[in-house]
Image (cartoon, rainbow, N blue to C red; front, side, top):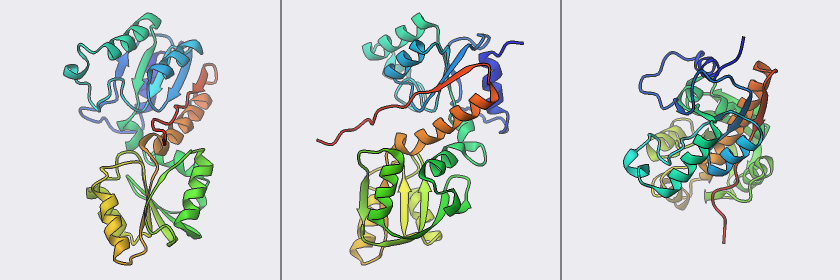
Length: 264
């Protein structure tokens, strides 16, 4: 019995009750296509799609969308030459592209979070796993030392520090992706008595400004901002390893993306 695109989508969504109005849709391709090769990536960039096709994959599973907004907006992409060229590549290749986002995060534990913890080798430091966050109890380290550890384990050229970089960290919290905004991050830090927040991203004028004021008041608080992709890509790599075990007859390849920003 062949494994189709629909079979794989159903399997990925099977551990979570149906999510209304989900963004986890087949963004390109046909559901009845027999899958002969799978590529997994955080973002379905033009380069990633080219590499997936070159590797012989006819299904790409990505965490984020094709069209630069959380939900497809025809007004944004309808007459855009950049998106049109991307679509032509997809149509010419026949590759199917499935977005695995909502069901991915709703799965407990969230593989995006557990993938990051594994990449950081912090599984043994996990004190509590919450639906959208993790709380760590770390051996005594400064914020600067934590930052160096994160950079080394994730192979990051840089990350951003806000607050007291010399503060000692014993309790840290992690919020992956776009969960670093004030409405989520500030209550999380306060209610769990955290010394350090590690986030993917969020508005720069929200949580970072809270941390700036806290540090100015003499409170030993700090924030590490990794970047959206840097916080979530390890989870998609972990997904690719799961798929290799689930579908040993199908070649599965993880395709990393390059950092979106450079320091000049």
